[in-house]
Amino acid sequence: MWGVARATLDGNWAGGHTVPSRTLYPHQWSWDSAFIAIGWAHIRPDRTWSELDSLFRAQWRDGRVPHIVFNPAVAGGAYFPGPGFWSSNTVEGTPPVATSGLVQPPVHALAAWHAYRRVPSEAGRVALRRLYPRLVAQQRYLATCRDVGGAGLASIVHPWESGLDNSPAWDGPMSAVPAEAAVMRAYRRRDTVHADPAHRPTDLDYARYVTMVTAYRAGGYRDDSLADRHPFLVECPLFNAAMGASEVALAGIAEAIGVDPGPHRERAVAITEAVVTRLYDLDTGTFHPRDLRTGRLTPARTVLGLTPLILPGLPARQVETVLAEARSARFGLAARMDRPLPSHDRTATDFEPLRYWRGPSWMNITWLIRLGLLRHGHDRLAAGLRSSMIDLVAAAGCHEYFHPDTGVGLGSPAFSWTAALLLDVLAD
Image (tube, rainbow, N blue to C red; front, side, top):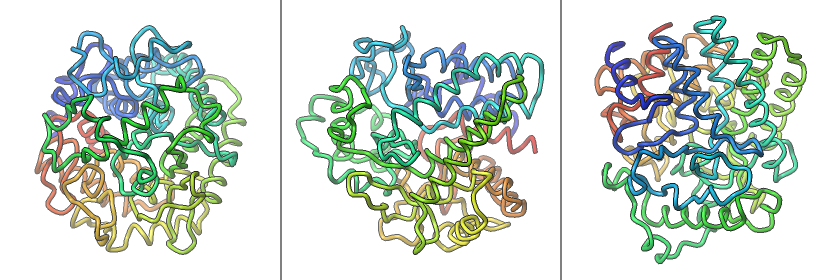
């Protein structure tokens, strides 16, 4: 399997960065590159730093790291929405290369620190020193420009920013977004050319996705009046847990390069407290997104609720109840996994084992939850997830995602973060 994973990464290397896949995703994606960098550390550490450097060269002046960096050598119509749709070149403070205007979960400091600790070297230390101010700027952007709720958490303005694009967690907030058929008639989806439409978001979902981007773009991607004008504003457990975990990682990076780690540790504590205060539900014993338009937590019990385990300072009470949720029939976490970890509650009426983020198992989320289990001393449960990850790829290959019951590979084949994170768990 090591050879298959390495061949997948080599095959998707685009000279400076790695594409998620050669079919559906021909450009550079933000959190994909973070996970991919972790895998490269085990076989080509130089590419770890090239991967992250390439992404952060596209950072906007305000600190945001765009969720897509477009390769100018790829035809504009190869992916929708492409560079012409985003029009980043019309916005002041954007890089020379075309990008999107959205972000993704800030797992980059976490990935950089994890990769460095896996394979420490002087070249890696130099790379950390180079990346550090950019990682700090990314965190600062999220903590200031995106704190729409005023409680110390970042808000996402689109489901794509969560990384879990089509999760049932977004159904409520999405239902308030207007969707006009004319919106999609003006564009042609490319994802359903490369993947079964039954596995992808619906046309109605896509119409709403386009509406949200169009609204954000019309305001020049500014964040100063989001509460007044933007139709989708949500505080996401994964996004904010990643922000808190990244402050912990930045504290480690700061120490490694001779910078004061104290402010990062303080921010990690503050973010953890805000995640618990704002997003933890006493009745369900797990975490839920908060819809800032209604002020309410969204009801779906998705894998998002388990991801705050990556916060080292998560209180014992929340660790205990989240583990109970994870062990329940909804998710089936065990020391010996009989099925992969799903992205949505298996017992829910809207559980869809084939549709994007509405049931299937994903390697990156499993990796994050495994990391959280290790951080809280649950090594046996973490071992169960590790075995599950290895078994999935052994049976189905490095697919984008997997059937949560049968383990059949779904989505794009030869998917980079699956290969990269497999390398990381095999290295254990």
